[in-house]
Each structure stands twice: as structure tokens, then as C-alpha cells.
Image (tube, rainbow, N blue to C red; front, side):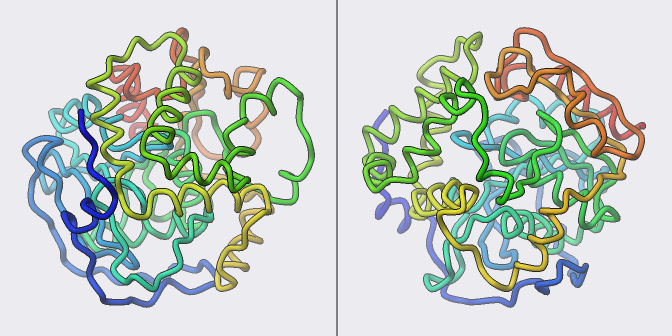
Length: 342
């Protein structure tokens, strides 16, 4: 498959030149509720677009417009196609399944070329509340893995009235940057090799190189999911999302910010202090540990259990790696349905 360059992709998806004000730096709910019902997607090839905060968000919208909203959040180096089987399952059960591209992925673009390509955890979470506001959704079930778990955890912890239930792969992933300064076990550090690679200019050039960056993503897929026999068509369907003109800047900032090597925006400092204090999650939650994922912590969820103070279940998926919804779509969809009934 031939992948277009980032300049061509930018022309294809378009960049608006309008700016919008963000939410308050305190992290307090200050959201409007415009009526933006959207239209139904017929498949994952039918991507919708909506202006939401700083972004023009690309998303898939399956199921009845009046169904219970479920927002499904992907990770890196993945995209919305992690949910290509999960979303239709939920839609058939009467849910409105919404699958947005994160900033820097797919057809999600910045509405202004002057906006800081910020990927600190609080800003990414605000992207999703902005997305909910744009669609007129006050409350949703949120489910995710990797960046998606972290984002869902943040929204559930800081704005719990917006989350009906939560599914979080690998548990509680809210980042405390001070704690991140401390070294961990050597084997775990080794598994995070790409974080340190991205901390260097060499890594930045590698990610930006179309061939090296694509090979790197494929390597991460194989390492993260050692039991998943994905084919090249499946991989390249997702790799097309990395042609976004802001992909490199967003990914680099996300990982550099986590390591304390890049600054975020000062207006989110108060919100980041709240997150660093590890606020509890009170909404009904199911956590999932994929047993074959090299990043799954030991202890079958015991290490993060205390962060979840509301109705709660924990599940371990044997033989499943990092990209849980794509590797085990039936089980992931079942977790979403069950969380909504807790």
C-alpha cells in the first residue's frame, strides 16, 4: 500500500483557520451543550467531521442517534480501527458507538495552524469533553486502552458526572510526572524503549521518516501483542492514520511531556496538579488486564484496585496483548455492556 505524504494528507482533510477558547484552567465543568446530533456512519469507511474545541474531529458514529452513547478511545500506534468489530456489536445492541481519532491521528486536524500541538494528558482529555459538547452529549460510557485508558480515567476522575460507566484496560493510568522521574525495573524500562528513543532528535527524525516511522509502528504492534497474527492489510489500514500532518509533533510531545522533557500549557497546571494527586474514580468501572501484554502489571489488578472506589469488576484476558478491542472484540464489547449495568 502506498502512503501519501503529510503535505498531501493535509490538503485532503483541510485545515480551518478558526480559533476557539478552551475550558477553564481549573478543570471545573464549564461546558456548553449545543445541539449537534451528527449523522449516522454506515461503516468505518464513513468518517464524520465535527468542530470541537481546538480540533476538527474525525469520528465514526454507529447505531441509533437516541441510543446510550459509548465513546471508544484508541491508543498509539493505533487508530479507530481497533474498534472496527466492537462498535458494530454495540450498535446492534442499541448503543450509539462513537469512535474519534485523537489529535494528530487520521482526519482529526487543528482548526488553527497557530495552536500549540500539545499532547499533555489533560489537554487530550479535554479534547474528548469538547467532542461530547459538540455532539450535545452530556454523559457517556467511555472505554479505552493505552492513551484511551488514560483519557477515560481522567474524565471519570475529574468530571464524573459526564461518565456513566468506564472500561479501562490496564487499570489506572493517570500520569504523575514527578513519580515518572523514578527508575523502574530494568525489564520494564527496556519495554518502554521507544519513549526514550522519542526523547532524542534521532528518534524524532526516525518517527518523521515515512519508512522508519511505519516500521517502528509495526515493530511496536508485534512486541505489544505477541499472540496476535495480524496481516499487512490490517496494519496498513491503521498506518494510514499516521499520515496526519500533526502526528509526529503530537506523539513526540505526548511522550516527552510524560518524561518531564517538554512543557505543557500553563493554563492546565491546576488540572495537572489535581491529576498528580491520583484522584479516585467513583463511577462504575471494569478494568481489564491483557495477560500477553508486556505492559500489564503483575498482581492481577491488585496494584491499582484502590483507585476505583465505585462499583467495580476486574477481568484478565488470557492470551491477549495490548490492543485488546481488536484482538478480543467480543470480550471487550461484553465488558462495555456489563460496565453499563454495574
